[in-house]
Structure formats: structure tokens, C-alpha cells
Length: 54
Image (tube, rainbow, N blue to C red; front, side, top):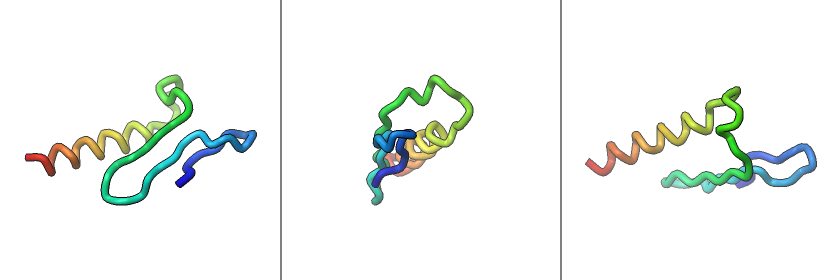
């Protein structure tokens, strides 16, 4: 599923809906800390995974 496009319509992010956490981005999100949703999603997925593995 396309999650983000740039101003020219180029796909910048995709997600794979379902049980697992899959996310791909075509930019450097670490260059701007204005929007931390990507990092929050990764931390939440890691926390859920760690809880499921125990």
C-alpha cells in the first residue's frame, strides 16, 4: 500500500498491511525530526515483537 508520495507523485513510502510490521521509505527520515510517527511506529513494533517472543 502506498503511504507517501513526493510533490511529483513519486512513491516515497510503502506499507504491507497484515499481522507483521513492514515499512519501506525512499528518503532519510532522520534528517528531519519534525514528524516522529515513523520512529514511534518502529519502536511500537519492536516492543510488540519483544513481548511476543518472551
